[in-house]
Amino acid sequence: MRLQIQLLLSLIFLMFINIVNAQQIDEMEQKKKNPIIYAEMFGGGIVMNQAGLGGGFELNYQYKKNLFSFRYTNVVGYIEEEYKRAFLFPRVYVAEDNLEYAFLYGRRWMNHHRSFSISTGISCNNMDIRRRIYVETNNEEGQTYKYTYNSNYETFYGVPFEANFKWFYPKKKSRLIYNALIPSIGLKVFGNISKHTYAGVGLSIGFGLSREY
Image (cartoon, rainbow, N blue to C red; front, top):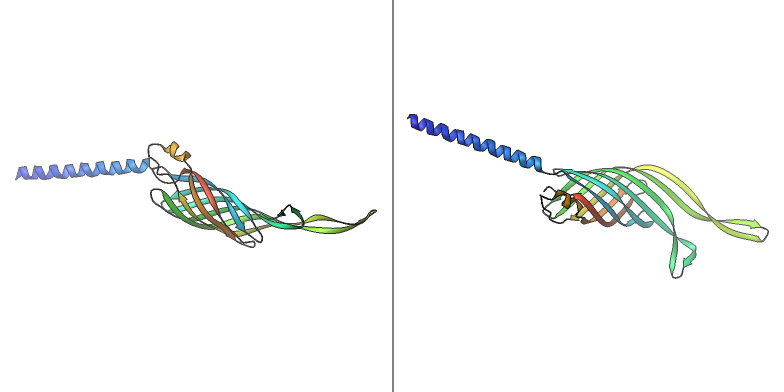
């Protein structure tokens, strides 16, 4: 009977030691996991009040499936000049120039070498709206025409949004610096719902730790 009790106590002690060791290993592995933080540049075509180009910079941090982002975007719309052409191509001027500063929250899902995310948030926009107008003048030589700009500057808030499809190289856990330097590429749909709504689609290139290693 005493031998059986000793064997039982020994088994309980061994089980306890194994549980403690397993917890310590798990804690060590969790401590070794790198944060998911990465930056990206992006650019593409946009449609605002006028068609044009847009691009910018974004910094992202992910906790579990929660994605927090800061996005800077510059979108520009163009209008064709009525009286001037460069050979067969129309000449254009900047009619809308919007600077957007946005904070976004979203969700991100990923596997070994690709990810998908959607986000929305709030933004502050500073927009310069310009229109070229032609003015009739009179001088000693007679009646002439010249052009000038009618400019209007606006600040307003909006609701930014984006969706990202990203592909990244399956990197190794032991080379975090090397992993951070290997770029990822992606497709980005981005825009802003506001007084001057716009939407665009383009390509992105990112650097950093885009997943846990």
